Image 1 (cartoon, rainbow, N blue to C red):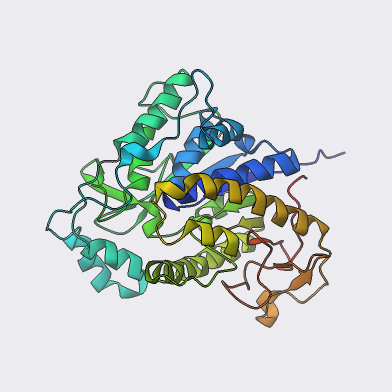
Image 2 (cartoon, rainbow, N blue to C red):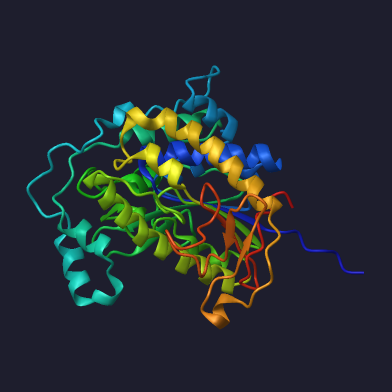
Length: 381
């Protein structure tokens, strides 16, 4: 009699700046409280930018509840403090008057089909002067708390931190066997180094910057991990948008739409490998609180509390939904959908789009399965 193989679960945490971090921690807290799942026990955790910070803390034994308390200003002795005021103001310092990466610009020109507008913009932007050492210090403090040397990586479990090579535009998965050697604090700083804002982080003669420049979450990098279920928390994307009036917020929403399209393409790729994917993104109410500057520290507490509430609403709505059976989007080109008792829709990630008719639940939640049909949110299994 054969033994049933254990389900392998993954957690993918995306980019999103200071406010994205606050929203993400609220969402993770809601997931754990609603489902009883310990997200830190995920078999593979992939983090990009703000998600790299949270992913690293989880792997270092800093629980979601501890991070949630930190967002509320509640600290126990020895707990790391998620205080990003040392990163500086909510606007970048005056940059150096030199192009960020001429080599990356050349690579983008030679291979335009592989270069997104964000990558090209990162190459053109002047070199950032900002220091991101506060992020490295936070991770180093968590490593010391866990009894680990700063040069090491947490164990057990797989932690992957995504950054971008600033000269080639290639994504690098720090923590993977073939990645350049870099300490965890440095890898997280590299993953968070926004081009034009912060100085790149160097290792082995190469420069690395924010992994969110290439992809909002790099979900596709989990395709080869043999995972059965993946939870994706992507603060830089939205399956349902608002209609802001401010010029800055309107530009941010355009960038967010492009990021969401990238995210959904990656979700489809991972689904094709056989994994079931659940995606959580900020919804209209969250976006209204976030505004247009994801580095605005003054909105952090409100973003966190809003995320707690909207994510719980989305999870409960998804759990109630009983979607009608529709053909797979891969065959019809149209997303499957179902309407729950509250009127919120769940949709197949492969077919959904930001701001489309029948957007996902209140916090922008969507869950998909191997068939490509919408299957509702079921995180408790």
